[in-house]
Image (tube, rainbow over all chains, first blue to last red; front, side, top):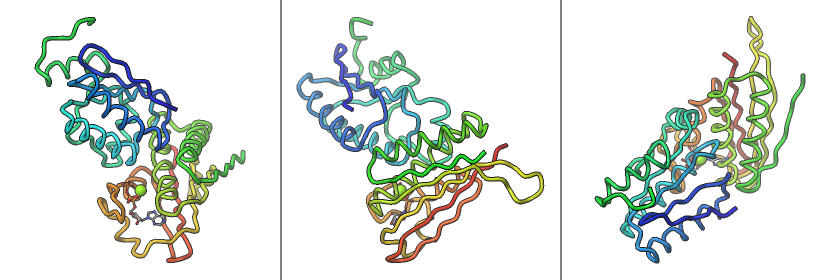
Length: 124
Length: 136
Ligand SMILES: Nc1ncnc2c1ncn2[C@@H]1O[C@H](COP(=O)(O)OP(=O)(O)OP(=O)(O)O)[C@@H](O)[C@H]1O
Ligand SMILES: [Mg+2]
């Protein structure tokens, strides 16, 4: 299942809709990399609210996407990690080292505004 | 109540299926929400290892009763494959050890998530991980 990517002001928002296959994640990475160039986006929000588990593979992938986007000049923030999911990540010893996280979409936008040092984008 | 399920693991989508079945069984057994997620995460790791390191295998899940006094109820998960096996199990259990470019978190992580964890592996014959979690 493909991940829809929305453009909001200077940012891109990718909302993960369901559990993703490896191919979906690779495609998400490629699509984000490409669109950051097309739209000259400075920030990307990845919404993982619906993910039931973030395991070592998902962690590695999210980190990889964030690092790749950083090299393309964009900041990434992961939003919506559920409490139980976060607890399991802690138990697994997983961290999203070097990747921004925020509670929800709104906090994610605020985080990006701060990190990309822009005045808040219009529309919100 | 005998609720046994068997899930063939061949691709990433099967990992999701195993996780969902484990979640359903854990809920049925009366585990709380946080524990259900811990169990699903452990299943995800061992299933992922089958796909990553052994290509195919299977995961069976069932309810278990502890033999020791009190007869505590729990969930048992067995991940079995006939892949290449693990040369040094103690090393594979170390946090951060990976023969691929993984984080090396899967095996030690799954052990932390569960109450009991055993791994039997033989080169050329395959790997079996047996793990249990008891209801609190
Ligand atoms: N089912 C298996 N068959 C063969 N080798 C395995 C199996 N499971 C684990 N291993 C070996 O044990 C090592 C450690 O496994 P572990 O799950 O901890 O880390 P990983 O899979 O390499 O990375 P991560 O799980 O963090 O993505 C693996 O790199 C692999 O060599
Ligand atoms: Mg692993």
